[in-house]
Image (cartoon, rainbow, N blue to C red):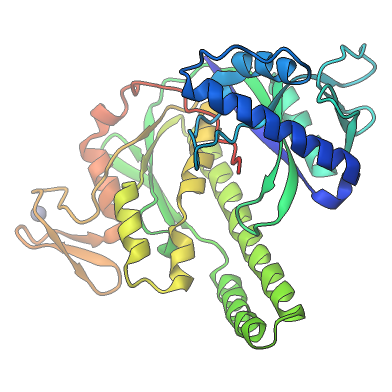
Length: 382
Ligand SMILES: [Zn+2]
């Protein structure tokens, strides 16, 4: 089975010469206009004749399957510009593809878009990421570039997504790792189930003290920004992006730890995530804003899924109830200290353990291979 992982290389807009930026935006705009018509016509409108739009149209057809078909937004398909790509490790011949990722020189060159070459210096962390993928037997398949807002800070950035592919085989699991993503503000509780027994359980939490401090800082700066403006607004924005990075690092590290442990235990991962609907209800409900940030579980779920697929860990999403009694299926009531008690049979346990007991009960069903459909690539294009 072929699986994919994406590295998004993101740079401040100021790092690209202004005349190239203007030209790139123009090409992006024109291509999106054609792609939108193509999309609306059910992919029947003919490809453009002139370059570079012709080149992008060909690449789009080729890479379509790997693009997030997030559909039309305000009547426009915000498709990124698709490039064929080459990765050069040593001194291989330059094959004149649109994107050349040159590890020996430590840079990326973006060409064939009609405005010369855009060069990006690779950061050490990016080189490390790419080298690890190559060691795992992956290859660079294609690339997407776009200029757009980043979601968290709303700043405009130049973005390049490098898509790597790899062949992988899923292993046959002998255990189950159940991960409960229902209440991130209490941490991500998980456990490993071996047939009848829960052999390990723990909770992953971000640094709650630091998160709390940053949140206080942000609300202080936000009110100063409203009163006096200027520097305070900039500082508020910086503090927000620090908080965002802190949570992101937590998500990345937690996903990595969990998937590594699943591999070691030869476990299938079963994620219990709330329906989008119930998350929305919580978001609209009377949760304080400081707790709402923990409800952004979508990214963590995608990270776990992406890593599991990449390393051949069987993965599925199932509801594992934490308020339904695993003995008699009656409703359980919440006690203080995050314990729950069955109203009918009196069974009592920590709330975090209930999903694991459901995993014990459903073990033989959950360990079966899931009906698998590869997830689409999720590149946050805006
Ligand atoms: Zn019961």
